[in-house]
Length: 82
Image (cartoon, rainbow, N blue to C red; front, side, top):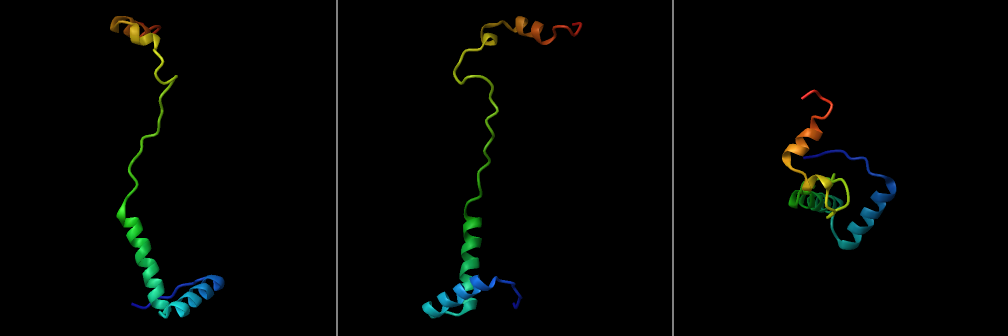
């Protein structure tokens, strides 16, 4: 398939020089580069990483950990008429 690309002059000159040095066509070099990009992006998608949204000092004991469920519930509903 034929297509038209706008490539900056300095980059095109570098690519032409590499193609000439390596004895390959400009088309072959462009295809090789595109195949490499496709393979790299297809190979390993970035795994999802959940942002750390923890609060407080890691490993530090919280006052709420020692409270009973009833005491926690009272704090949650404090001032709400329950």
